[in-house]
Structure formats: C-alpha cells, structure tokens
Image 1: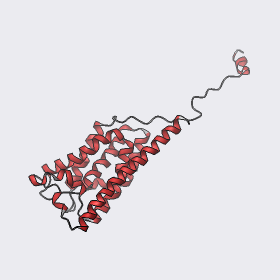
Image 2: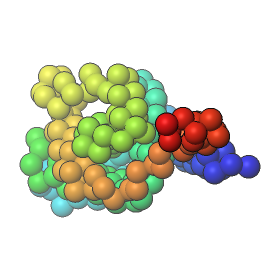
Image 3: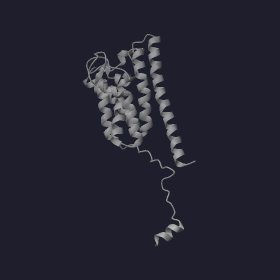
Image 4: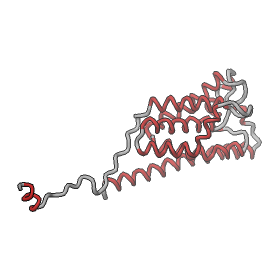
Length: 219
C-alpha cells in the first residue's frame, strides 16, 4: 500500500468519524425537542436571559433548546454539515473552537443582547461557518480552499443573519458567534498542519540518458 493510499484511507476514516459525531449531536438535539413536546415542557426559560442571574445558566443550555420542531429542523442540516467540516478539516482547532463558540457566544449575549430569552443551535452554526470560511481564505492550502468554498456555497447567505430583521430571531447570537469564529480563524489559522502534497507517479522520474545521448553530447 502506497503512502498516498494510506493518507486517503485516513482522510476517509476521519471524515466518517466527523460526520457520525455531528449526526450524534443533531440526534441529541432532536431527542431534547421530542421530549419537550411529548411531556409539554417549557424549556425556553432555560435560554440566555441577558443581565439576569437566572438567565446566566442559559449559557450552558441555550444551544440545546429550540422554540419549535421547525426551528430545530432549520438548524439540523447546518449543524451536521458545518460540524463535519470543522471536525474533518481542523481537528486540532475544533477542540478550541467549539467550546469557545459555545460558551463565548452565550456570555456575550448575556452581557449585551436584548432582554429576552435567546436560544437555538444557530449560536453554534454561525461561528463554525465563519471560522471555516475565513480560515480557508487565510491558509490557502488545497483542502482548506475546497472546504471553505463548499461551506460558503451552501451557507454563505447566513451572513445576513448577523443583522437585525425578525424580532423573534436572536441576531445577537448570530453576530457574536460570527465574530468569535472570525477571531479564532485568525488566531488558529496555522494550528492544524496542512495536508501533505499529493505526489503523482510521474513526479520525480528522471530519464536516464542513453549511450547515444552521451556520445552526441561529446560531439
């Protein structure tokens, strides 16, 4: 087995592992939402309530809570695809990026947002999308560029979500999550090693001069 085949196998395994972790988190969110509807629970009160001590614990719980099934449905694919992109493309950085986006966004919302309950996994997706896109533009290696372009093609429209529009939508969560993602992209742009350059079979081959060539060169 060649080194290139080993690297390809490792890539495929990491992609599968990243995807399964992302799907597992999405399933967890759906279990919470289904339990909320099944038992008629009022979980929205566990969101972030800015500048109220009772709402401080929402920093931990807000990304896990959604207002409705349609709200969660809208967040499911971004959660799966963006988490997969982050874990696959930047496995070392992800260990730093995910907890900082998770906790940092909630803290900023608690400090600066409107006085209302803020919740939903979009507080994570905006940070991941902006991190993956910006770090790809900064690194400019082949894998980073591809992941960045795919993410922007799928979710580039999320940029408009950082501006106030619908009063029922926490644009503050989107804004602070995006800012944190961008800052982390600059800080961690070289934290993950670039993928090895592919070496093709024809590279490095040098034609041995024939006897005629040697004779001709002496003429």
